[in-house]
Image 1 (cartoon, one colour):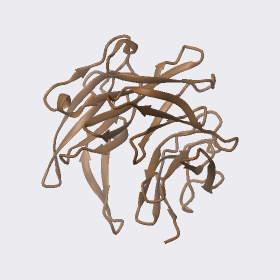
Image 2: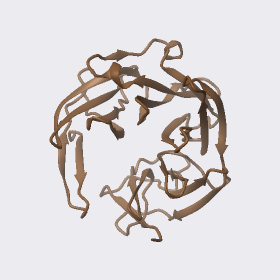
Image 3: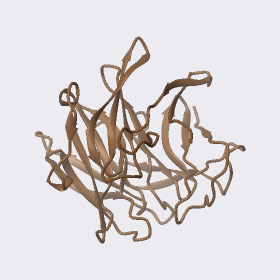
Length: 287
């Protein structure tokens, strides 16, 4: 019943409204912001996930001027579940979490778009999207109860792309040749205790990938040798104690891991029910 809203958190943790988002023009439902990223020119891209209608999910751009949001426009249309967005080397990468949820195993993938092509036009994805030239690679998900695949995206400092496979709890890696073609598409990291892989964040200082493990209420850490360790984990909570309440995104700010909690119970989660309020958790790292 409430409109979608972006908030801004300042360095001293003051939170303030940033921009109220209009409803989707077709579904007439509130926008469903998932991934968000900053473009080199200061604009913001974000994924608008729509649960109703066929292929109504999109990627939007918020034009910025002097640190303030201006107009908001669609730049890519035709996704089923547009999810993570990340800018790298003049391109926008977008994860599509459900190319074909009915397939066994379910398929999902990653799309790549030139930033210059998103400046003044709306890209319409092909139908089926597997025919779209922007699709650079697919992955499979074997969890039939919850066929959610490609999710979080992160690049390391050598240009390799890592993709979280949400329901299988694996982290995949795409490697590229000099022309940008995917040459390696493999499962890079998995562990018995990593139950899901939602948002990813690569820390160039430590060469580690932080993984939001929603199902386990945990943050996992993947090293570039593929090994996995647990940074933090907790049981069911509403988040008021600072604990994680189904973490969906992670990022590093100084010596802190900032964790966004989605509180959206899905099968297999430690978190089993919705509760208020919505929270963001902080995990302190050693200096």
